[in-house]
Structures are given as structure tokens and as C-alpha cells.
Amino acid sequence: MFNMKIRNYRWIVVALLFIATTINYMDRQIIGLLKPTLEKEFDWSETDFAHIVMAFTAAYAIGLLVFGRIIDKVGTKIGYSISVVFWSVAGMLHAVARSAFGFGLARVGLGVGEAGNFPAAMKAVAEWFPKKERAIATGIFNAGTSVGVVVALFVVPWILAHHGWQEVFWITGALGFVWLIFWLVLYEIPSKQKRITAEELNLIQNDQNENATSQEIAGEKIKWSSLFSMPQTWAFITGKLLIDPIYWFFLFWLPSYFSSTFNLDLTKPSPQLMLIYAATTVGSIGGGYFSSWLIKRGLPTLKARRIALLIFAVLEISIILAQFATDIWVAVGLISLAVAVHQAWATNIFTLASDMFPKETVSSVVGIGGMAGALGGILFPILIGYLLDSYKMQGNLAGGYNLLFTICGFTYLFAWLIIYLLTKKQTLKPLK
Picture 1 (cartoon, rainbow, N blue to C red):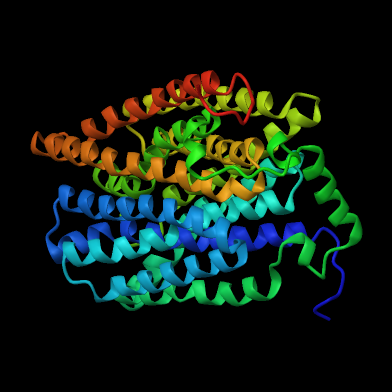
Picture 2: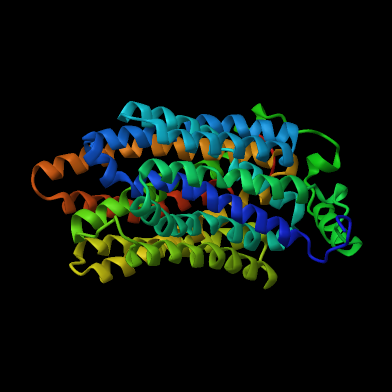
């Protein structure tokens, strides 16, 4: 039974990646949804909360660098397993925290563990998918980032209403161990997977042979340290460093924004927030489909990714209009578009790593770029906390959010320009 051949087994792999990413983002989003409750119980300021977010992002940055290398060394199956166990335990430990410092420590553990998700998932995509399908595969599993938030919007208020905030962390933290059972049973690389058909194995291996880099053909290995001398690495770093902090702002502060600006009750399921985060699912899958469609139309892979990224960068400017919204549903519409476009961008940035590097180094590159994004996530909350506290003292908290929306709107175009300049020539040669 366990060795029965299954057609298109690679899509089962994507389903596993999607579920893991969903759990990952549900666990990290909980702190944002519980923010009003925990602020009252522990008397936090906006700056206290910013410090807790920074603790997570700092640990996440370190974890990405570490897990990127570990996963390339030990393999996807073992590396992903270690990551999930680590973050699930850390998620449960939030329940015993009793101060901002205690929550900060728990977030450190969560950040280190959750950092393994994307390096492992992208390595799995590189192992299992031909290039023309990688963006859509990435879009599907990356949709878990938004689905996890939507699930949290259902689950957290329900648990909070029937139990307490401690039980929220205990229950959600345990889900990772359930996923781990299926992962250990179902996942192997294609060459070792007994359930894969010969046709599917040939599809995967032929594409990887046809798209092999000159280094792979020559049998040379790319050293980890030499990745920093390659323009492609810096293109990926740029896409993460400048843009990741914006999504983390959407992730951690949007509930509070709607609570303070439109008096949204976060102790109950919120259709407004559910709609926003559901829109990111459309963006994630749609963004992957769009660049894959361009490739099928005959465009070179890298050119298709860059065209898609440019279109998304232009569309993202629409977020600056949110500052003029006086009706909650107008704000929901504008922010839904913004977060959907962000996920479309993120899907194609992730896929760039598998496009430009051999699969043996994909986790390392994703880890390096992810670390850069997390470092940006450390610095941006400092600005967020300062602006929101300053505007709050003036009795105009909405003004702080409006300024932040403007900053977010124009950052994508700036990032795209740098990426374009760094990838004008698609080579794996070091910078001179």
C-alpha cells in the first residue's frame, strides 16, 4: 500500500508544504490577534509590543542563516522536521510567559524554529518541480501564509471565548506535531520516492538536466561564502530586505490598525480581516500563475519574473490611498489589494532563488535572503513603534498609519529597480 504508484506525486508534496506554512503563519499571527488582550493584562505600550516583534524578527534572521545551511547539509526531510519541532515547542511556551520580556524570549524560540520553513519548502520545490511549474507551486504553498492568518482569525477568538489566551498557545502549538507525522511518512526526494511514477520522475530529472548551470555540468560545487559575491544573491537579498518588513507590518499591526481606527472588536471573528488575508491567497497563487503563464508564452524565465515583479510594484502604489479611507470597507478593499499584490511579489521573489541557483544551494540562498528580510523586519518596527507612539500622543494614531502606508507604497518600485540592475546578466559568476 505504501509503495503504490501515485500520479503527479509532486502536488502531494506541495500540499504538505502548504499545510506546514499555514501552521507556521498561524502560530506567528497569534500574538497580533491577542495584542489588545495582552496589552490590558500586562500594560504594554506600543513600543513594548514593537520590542516583542523585534525579538522574533532578530531570532528569525539568525535562524534563517543557520537553517539555510543546515537544510542544504542534512537534506529537506530531516531539516524541515527539526524546524517544525522547534517552533511548535516554542509556540506552546508562550502560554507560560507573564511579562513582555517573557513573551520576547518565547518569540525568540519561535523565530529560530519558524525560520526553517521557507528554506526547506523552496528546496523541496527545486527538488520536485520543473522550472515552468515552480512559480505556481511556490504560489500554492506560499498561500499558506495568508490561510494561516485566516485560520487564526477563526480559531483564536473561539478559544479565547471558551478558555483563555494561554490555551490558544497550547492548542495551536500542538498542530505542528500532527503535521510532522504525515511529513515523515510521505516525503522523500524524487530519486528515493517509491510512490512516484517513472513518467513523473523523468519529467523532473529531464528539466533539471536541461536547466543545469555550468557549475553543475562541470561537477563543481558553489561554496556558501562565494554566494555573497554573486549579483543574483544580492538581487534576492534586495527583494527580501526591502519588502519583507512591509508584510510583517501588515501581519502584526493591521488588527490593531482596524481596532484603533474603525473600532473593530478583535475578541470576535472579523470578516474584514478575514477578507484581507484571504485576498493574499489569491495574490500568492495568481502571482505564481502569471509568471508561469509568461514562460509558457515563450518568454525567458528571468525576463518573465522581472515583468511580473514590475507590474506588481506599480500596483502596490495603490496602498497610499488607504489614508483617505473613512469607511472600513473602503479601507478593507484597498488593503486587500495591497496584501494580495505583495504575495504575488513574494511568490516570484522566492522562485527567483530556484531559477538562478542549483538546487544544492537553494536553501542557503533562501536563508541568506530571508535573514536580510528579517533584519529589515528588526529595523522597521523601530520606526513603526516610534511613529505610532508619537502620533498617539498627539491624538492622531491614524496619521501614523497613513504615513506608514505611503512609505510601503513606493518601496516596491525602488526594490524592483535594484533587482533589475543586478540581474541584467543571468550568470553564476562572482562580482568583480
